[in-house]
Image 1: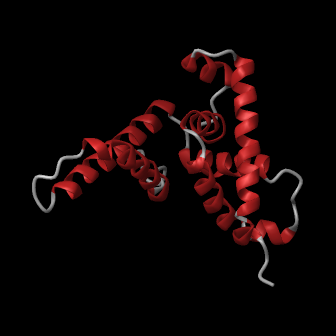
Image 2 (image 1 turned 90 degrees about the horizontal axis):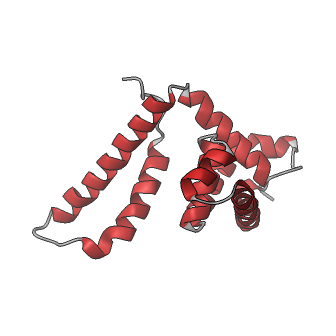
Length: 161
């Protein structure tokens, strides 16, 4: 199982929950467990997609996930290198992922692909049918939104009074 240790349950579930909410209008209840089965199927598909993505990339995802989150967090918290901040990085990562989920779909996709999947702007731009410069600007605006959100999420990042 080449994907073990490479897929984080929290991230997978967060993406699945977003899909469940987007698709809820198409759900039809048939019995008491139909919602559970329907939601489980969406989660299973998210998991399968993640496994396929990691197999295609053929990278060490443990290093990639930790390093890419670190990279995105560094962009959002630019210039804030206090030792006390370093100790709370895991909480900050959780807050960051929560803020990321609040971005508009295209912005979230650009940031995810650029920082978490470490794709080049040219590849993202080609897939989206946009210029590389437009994708860079959209990414910059999304990182600014993440900075704003992380400011509101400072209760996760600040030392206890």
